[in-house]
Length: 135
Length: 393
Image (cartoon, rainbow over all chains, first blue to last red; front, side, top):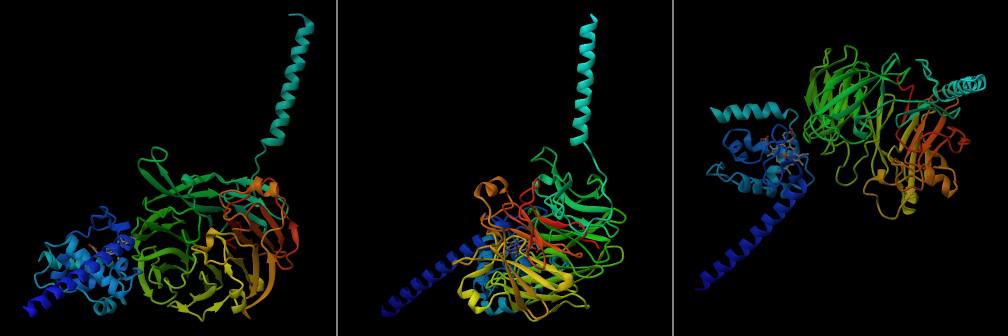
């Protein structure tokens, strides 16, 4: 009985916490990303890529780094923890169907590591990943 | 018809002709300017003015939906270039961007090069275009908001291609066939072209400035092989572009602790200029208790002059002469910001250099002594970006 109660409290607190996370992530998305990628993550054809379905990059080698090293992401004026949050948020929000089953959310340490090395040639890197995804 | 009426008509027609002739004489004269400019010819917006003689010389018919960039000049001084945007239905419809070529003698457009309709529409601020030091390839900064450069060969007058520059914005010449760009994370990107204007290499170097704590303004100035960009907090970041890789030199501050305690800050849109021969750096400043969201939003009320060798302030000048209120009212225009000082400064580079300020009118003074030559130029626009006509020398 006591244990169940404790568990319930824990779950409750955890939910509060993750909701707060989602809220601040959404807030940071609005502030730092939405201006270009739009409310629904749809982007603008030919100019700004859609974030819908970006989870597909995670299924190939180098994809996980790519999503952070894209300059719009790495150069964004949020700290590593916030950036990890926003990335996880866009993946869950815009790409639930493409997420690999064993997807592990990004954390601050990992994001911090990748973002130190922003991509200079995005198109090239992206083309390579896309061809890997196709095969 | 009787003779009297006939002769009256004759006289009337004669006088009308005389009047017309006079009208043409005094108002319709069109001059062809010499290709080699005088040292004190300055563009105020698109109007060319001899600031020493207070003489309006002409106006370049720049369109571009009010979003013209500044002028760049060919090495032989015969042509000048600017980027414009046009829509097929005036303010909407299909967009066409051009690099427009003007003849510097007539200030008339003579040719155009069509570029992708992507250039950053941001008014005439620094960094919109850059002619690399070899004087052949003009780069246009694009923002869609993906960022890239359009490269134009101004000798062959053709568009060469586009180079993507993700995360990095604005463009400045930085070598023979090289440009530098400022990146959102505080780094710089150098873009090098091959002999034909294609992309040879791109290198990104981190840590030039602090984009979050103390960002820099776009109004950088060139000092030989160095670019100097100044932060909102008044810190000068020298960037050496002479070598194969860009070098960050030690930064230094325009403001002492005492200046900061008195709330002095950099201000103005075109807030920096260098007199190359004497290594004097002129900086527009003002007092403001609150930090400015963007220094360009407020006029500078003083001009502080520094010796770039000793990095010491050597002079303090008022930004604009004291003016009667109605005088300011008559000339304050779009270029003016808070309306209590100067939004832009420029010095000419020849002998007897002059310091020009714009903001509620245009004033001209001796660049070294600060003595006024004209407190207020007459019959010239009271606002606009200042561009030195003999830039290419």
